[in-house]
Amino acid sequence: MKRLALTDLSLKVWAVIVFAFLFAPIAVIIIYSFNEGRLLVAWNEFGFGSFAAIVTKPAITDAVMVSIQTGFVAALIATALGTMAGVALARRAGKWAAPFLLLLVLVTVTPEIVDAVSLLPWMVFLGQDLGLSIFDNGLVRLVVGHSLFATAVVAYIVRSRLVGIDESLEEAAADLYAPPFKRFTQITLPLVMPAVLAGGLLSFTLSLDNTIVSAFVQVSGSTPWPVYVLSAVRTGLRPEIAAVSTIMLLLTLLALGLVAYVLRRAGDSATDIAKTVGGG
Amino acid sequence: MTTLTERQSASSPKAPRRRPRWMKLPSFALAIPAWAWLFAFFVAPVALVVWFSFGYKPGIFGTHANDVLSFDRYAEALSPTFFATFQNTLWVGVVGTLICLAISIPFAYWLAFKAPVSRRGILLAMVMIPFWTNFLVRTIGWQIILAPSGVLSEALQSIGALDEPLEILFTRTAVLIGVVYNYLPLMILPMFVAFDRVALPMREASKDLGAGRWSTLFNVTLPLAKPGIVVGILLVYIPLMGDYITATVLGGAKGNMAGQMVANQFQTAQNWALGSAMAVVLVLTILTTVAIAALISWLAAWPLRANQKLVLGDKS
Image (cartoon, rainbow over the protein chains, first blue to last red):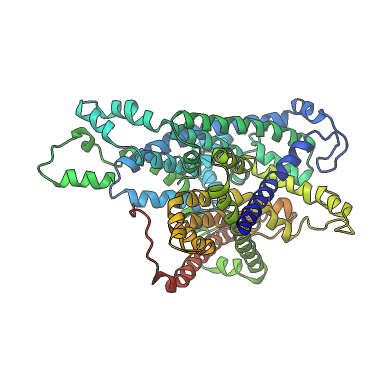
């Protein structure tokens, strides 16, 4: 029995170490957001100066606004496309399903840098060679770039949720002569709603986080927040960046809490939530 | 399951025809928008890049030209200067994935079997929180920690473990720490789900039948959790190989990951042809290594497969 307790204890110690590792840089960023110094990396003294400075710097607020707008539109598009694709995959899988799944898998496994370098010449081609000036717009480019991976993720989540639900409700509606569109909006959609919401919020956070694709497709004038931070890495990091990150961390936590709340209300256990989010 | 019942009801003539209108719409109608969107903004652009990779850079001001096609850009991408970077990327990718694996197995095991059930949800959420904090910002957090005058360096010096400031930032070790950190949650999550599916009764049965603790772990738990472990490895390895943000922040401006090299060709050198060839080589490297790893694990499991009898549930 003594050896048993020892392995359990060492596993527990390991877990504590892993959590410390996972939270170390986040804790550091939160602490350094109260740095009054001129440079983020060099700690000077405690203060709220960096939070006050955010408001006076239009470049920062603009970048955050661009990110939020992009995230919102990209999440809407990805959720709409992904939900329909997920429903089709779960309910009407035919011969087309295998190549379509392959396409989704390809989208998810392609390294982001490859997406990024592909989209840059493509946007230039669409915008300048084909004269579709909409693709010269910075927001449009960002939304398109952010929606690709997210569409695949939403499709996975919606599909895995719907596969677990019996089809009898939809069949009953069909027997009662509900037209297809009504059946979709009144039966299928409410059934997958938790997955749709989870997918939408995931798409939003993925978009907020997107750095590589953004850095390539962005047009000056609509720089999203991560690209602003990336350029600051090269020119010099200031504490305002940590301050904005602290605020955004709080907002992300709120969003995640919301997902968990919605899923739990729909009757999923915590483990199932992780499974849904993990795409399993 | 659904496809099976559908097929049965469609093929058997006596079955009453349910869902008559359902059948009238082509079955893939709902997937068309996503298909079109991904085709226009994923398949087409990637195909364009593959096409560019057979071209060349015309003069100083051009970015690409395709009037003469050749494999020369591939030869250039694999020339010694750039090949070293691919080697380095592969090293970071493989070692980083292995470290993630070594960290995750005991951790996910603890989370699935030892952690208090009531707190499992919140613990899982805690694993995911860093994952949803901005990628770049948490990497900057590591820059602060690993700096020569940073927290870690000072702490190590004050306890006497180190005589001089820590010189780890802007080295390959720093990049390795960064990528392990950034992709670890992607390994833990599917692995936890996999362990969680190996029901406790299965493990208890193994013990009741006289298997020891380690024997249960290696013959029952790990083999049953294998699909999740494989997903975790892929989720970590693929983005890790293409990563260039971590290397830029922690490896210095002239870090050496393939992602940075590709980005440089497009952004600084303006040689889209060479950059495209490098991107294709990167993707091929990832696919080849995954295939080799799959082959090795398949061959390694050969002697084991002969006496493996445990099958959990149906294969759906």
